[in-house]
Amino acid sequence: MSETRGTIGYIAREVFSRMYGRVSHKSDVYSYGMLVLEMIGARKRNSVSNNNSSSMYFPDWIYKGLEKGDCKRLLGDQITEDEDEDFSKKMVLVGLSCIQACPSDRPSMNRVVEMMEGSLSSLEAPPTYLLHISASPMPPSSCPEEENTISSEEIDERYSRCGHSFSCGYHMDLYYPFWTPERKECGHPDFKVNCSGDFAEFSISNVKFRILEMNFESHIIRLARTNYLNYLCSQNPENATINQEVLPFSIHTKLSTLYYDCPYPMVEVQPNDYIGRLNCMNEIGGRSYFVAAPSDSGDRATLGQLNASCERNVGIPVSQSALKTAEKNQSLEDVFNEGFELSFNSECARCVTSGGACGWSSTKFVCYCKDKPHEQVCYPRKKSNDFSCSVSLKIPPSLS
Image: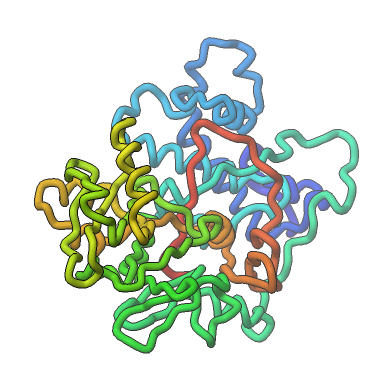
């Protein structure tokens, strides 16, 4: 580059000093980030009455506001619609990501476009960056050289294999932690999927679960116990525990219990809002009950009586909304047919957001990246502060 052109505040640091790395397309990303921050915050900043703020470095002022959770100062009182506020917050997060001091820490413009077009919940607050150019020399290792583009031949084959969803039965978009034998390294060992029938199913011990839904928009996975679909009088009920470190229950899921072969008249339970009678006398013998979570001490006393007297019981997660519907329609079968909700895996969400593909290596989660596997994410990130304006992560439906 023979000469430098442009407005000083918008020029990336590596343009002035190789201590920050080489001039590259990431230099344009820096300029774009400064432009975005200026668009969203300059007018409000100029109206701030504190004189000290007028001399503060502009990105520093933006970051301090985000750090304090002072969103009104950043976005302006004129923003009243939730949609406008969400978009403005998104612009702040994208802008701060673009002006990281080291070029290697900035997203590509393709990634910037994805961030802008995606939802606010798909973004995380960027880490604290070097806001001021230091007068003392930086060590050469402070900003690693931007890696050259990896050719298709050099892309890690596990990244290529695990970086997209797969079909199983009627399901078109399954992803981590689920896997099939040809994608073993792409899922958690507990969630091997059987695709021999029309539905995607997996087993924990001898208990089968059917995948009803994996929704990347709502961030929800919905499962059902296969042997309780349209039939509640299982001859051999078994308990099975889903690994919630991998797939945690949604806040809309609660644990219910089915009690089988309860002796009568030793156990006499009157149905109410949380107890339902099952018509399983012919198949199992004795009386059988469905019990949601007890709500008072009297309910808990009844639950203790059932635990002590009934031959078998099995715990099954259910949907709270389906329970409310069942209270009106008196149909417990619909509760189990509806299934229950789990949330997406948080480790995988962070990996995907960084441009990686989720997988499993021996005994732990791994993030497959274009160059090689990494433990958590594809780009180095310092631990970011907790912001009241920060947002959660979401996995996109396709990485291909």
